[in-house]
Image (tube, rainbow, N blue to C red; front, side, top):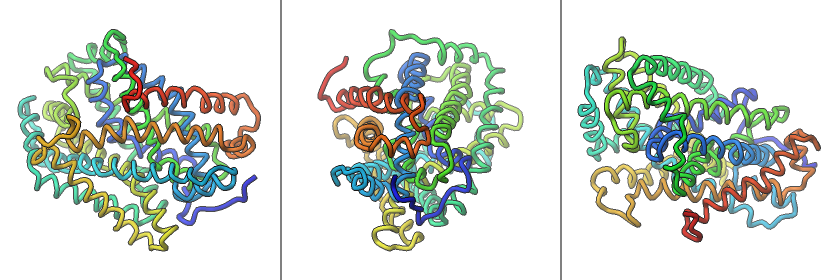
Length: 456
């Protein structure tokens, strides 16, 4: 058994605090923003079903693996992998897995911050009553005007990154935990209210059929790849966030129960987001697959028509901002932890350094919607390329290597001890899924994404 160690950065006050924080890492941009438009692009119900299968069969086992590695190492992902590789008698090159996670998180944070800036801009618009009586054309014009203005996007991107840096600088309990304990339940309640309103619209039945009546004739290999990528994106796997959060998890907390709770809450919010958005899409004649602006062009119509729409619209975009905020914090934290551990830099200074680097990288993404919209590499803008690289390649590859290390490299006694399952059936199920099911599934779609094989 490894010598007990404690993180120098602090610890969550409880298992519930970790669940809220880990769920908050995904909810907002992982679910409320990205899940609806990805579902729309790939045909609805069949995609939802494949996504849920990916969550259960691949996501949960790898989520458990990443948490157990994080709690066992109690350091930044880079140092955790180096330490555990040494303890388990493995090659030191496993430390590169930690590096890949931190880099992937940085890349994702760069465009997270840009979209987070959109939410801030929409808070101001909601407060000003911009959505009152708007039509689909109005919301489309408002959104296009926002993303077409590079200077305005830069200002919102800067503000959002400053907000992220400030919270990370305050630490685990005094920063992120205080916010998520209030904001995540509030966001869930507001989503339920939005679903309640959506039930009164003429498009609700059509939306239910769209989300829950699978049409597998519309499913191609690209959709399966997207579902797996969304599962990783949604659960924040492979980007170092869950590993660093796991390093702050109390020793007595059950990793299996915690992982299942995170997956259930995360998927539940994604489904609620779909139920809140797609009835409005069909009721107001919008396109379900209109892309990343779906939530910014659809929900404002509802706010403009419903009673107290200005109030609800303001609250929704405020809470969406904070949900995106908690996501960005989890992506910045691994790099800040590494700077503190390896360079002896104070947390506040480490946060500023890491935040500035991510801010600079984000400029490429915000310019992809305006000044650099016609500049493409491999047929993709900078924003699209970074999103594709991280979601479809780096995150699955990181998850694959995490599963391999936890189930093949780590000693059986070590993983059983950290999971607290002993030689129970639950442990054998996790080990089998992590050794065989998850790696095979992830490897297939990774090879497809890189063009090494063609599953189509």
